Structure formats: structure tokens, C-alpha cells
Image (tube, rainbow, N blue to C red; front, side, top):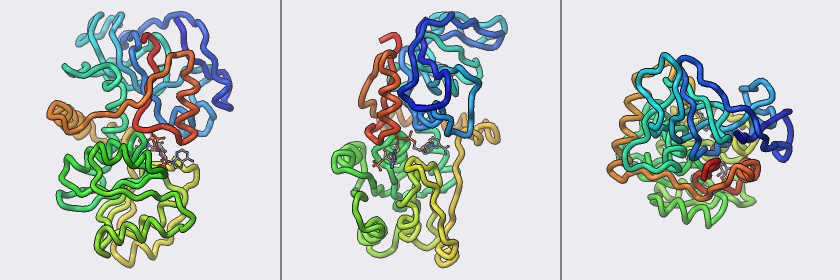
Length: 329
Ligand SMILES: NC(=O)c1ccc[n+]([C@@H]2O[C@H](COP(=O)([O-])OP(=O)(O)OC[C@H]3O[C@@H](n4cnc5c(N)ncnc54)[C@H](OP(=O)(O)O)[C@@H]3O)[C@@H](O)[C@H]2O)c1
């Protein structure tokens, strides 16, 4: 079978597609024919050796997939060949076949296509966990989403709306902001400007001087501090990631002055600390999907031969919503 391989940590352009032996599932594993594998920002970091997890080399990147079960290990009870599944894999997704731990698979919900299934779990679970469990977002509050047209950003807009918040989307181009409005943002801010405090000023204007109740920040860099300065009394900053490449240093008097909270969000580990809460969140997402309240935006599909271009485009700030690799498409 064909797989994208990272043979040494380094430039994304060094990734290669090669024929490798079909993997054999262990006792609690599934072998899945991959129909779609979503591209996530950590894939780009991982192949460059810049992510907190460094898999043994060579490895195939790709952390979430959807597809059809080809075979199952001896101890697997709930899946059989032919089942349509979604699965989180950490690595291995950008390949024609992928090994999946049965505990990390779930049935593809009825009515959901493979692209949507692959694009749903990581980003939407992160945003629901962040907004509900960490940020305690309430109906009627104002939520500001930075990097709002990206993968986690779009999911935060949709979930914010589903939770009853007023959502202000902030991104770097009018084109990206148009997509944010399409998925439900009430207001938009284009933060690509020379004035570092423009974001603070616009949020204050749009909230009548009160400020935002919650800021969802997957970007970091120069945007975090102005966003913190635009938090209301007891506002909450949700620290999701640093796609801009720079971890900001925030003066802590900004927290003291308005009893603001700066809150870290680490969805992957939270599922180990609170597996029951995670299952409840998945259930909530399925309900919202069935009700048409959330709908991952898959803006582009790449064949396996172009998987490295897909990873490069997320690293280069070009992606809107989610993109998927379709190894068997
Ligand atoms: N904490 C968690 O549990 C968790 C879970 C999932 C993801 N994450 C993190 O969340 C972040 C976003 O992930 P994602 O999959 O949503 O990525 P994404 O789709 O690429 O979105 C990131 C956004 O960041 C903005 N950005 C600003 N400067 C950038 C730069 N120099 N390069 C690339 N993007 C830049 C871009 O929006 P503009 O052009 O509009 O600024 C882009 O749309 C990543 O850091 C990821 O590791 C964290």
C-alpha cells in the first residue's frame, strides 16, 4: 500500500510517498481503508520535528481519519470488516491503509460522509471542551474567535452560536471573514493591520466598551495581548495554540485589573482525565450535527500524491476551514 513518509524531521517538501507493506492489526486494533484523512496544524509541526510529540522515524503523519474496516484483531468485539468508522490515530492517517486502536474508533454517524467524518472530531471536540468545560461560555455572552477561518476557528464559531453566544470572528483577510459570516459569525474584524491595538479597539467598539466575555485563541503571536486587553470584567482567555509561531508573554496586571482568567486548553489530555465528559461532548456534537447546527467546512481535497502540498498549505496560512487527503478517492 502507498503511504506518505517522513524519513527525517525537516522541511515539509522532503516528505515522500512510497509503497510499504500493509500493516497487520494487533489484538485490539482495526485495519482501516482510509477514505479521508484530515490535515491539522500539528501535522505540519510534527514532520518538521517542532511538535511536542516526536514519533520514531520513519513515520506516516495524519491524526484523524474516516474509512472502512478491512480486518480486525482477535480481541475486537464491536467492529467487523465493512464497518464505516471515524478514528483518531495521532500518526498513520495519510496512507491507503491505517492501523487504529479500537478504543479510538467510533462508527461514522448515519448521514455523514467520509470527508465530514474525518474533519469533525479533533477540531470540534477541542472547541466544545474549550468553550464549555474550560471557558464556561454562557448564552448571551460575547465570544471573540481569533484565526476564525481556520480548522478550530470555524468550529469555535459554530459551537459558540450553538451555545447561544454572540460571536465576533477575527482573521487576516476579507475572504476568510466572508467564510466566517457564512458559518454564523455575527461580526468580523480583519486584524491584518500595522496598528497592534486595532483588534482591542474594534472589540471594544463592537461591545459598546464592555469588552468580550471569552476570547478563543489558537493563534498567539501579536494578537493575544490586544485580545486580552479587550476582555471584559471576569473575561476568559482560552489558550488553544500558537499557529503564529510565537508564544506571547502577557503582563499579568492585565489579569488582575479586571479579574480576567487566562486558561490553558489541552483537549487530547483532557479526554484521559475526563473520559466520561469527552463521551458526553461527542454525543452533543452528534446531536448538533443531526440538527444542522454544526457542519465542518471541507474546502479542498488532495490525492495522496499531493499530501505534502496539503500539509504545506496549512503551514503557510492558506487554508480555509479544513482540508482532507483522500488516499482512496
Ligand atoms: N489545545 C488543543 O487541545 C488544540 C487542539 C487542536 C489544535 N490546537 C492548535 O490550534 C492551532 C490551530 O490549529 P488549526 O488546525 O485550526 O490550524 P489552521 O486551520 O491552520 O488555523 C490556524 C489559523 O492561525 C492563523 N495564523 C496566524 N499566523 C499564522 C502563521 N504564521 N501560520 C499559520 N497560521 C497562522 C491563520 O488565520 P489568519 O490568517 O486569519 O490569521 C490560520 O487560519 C494550532 O496551533 C494547533 O496546534 C490545539
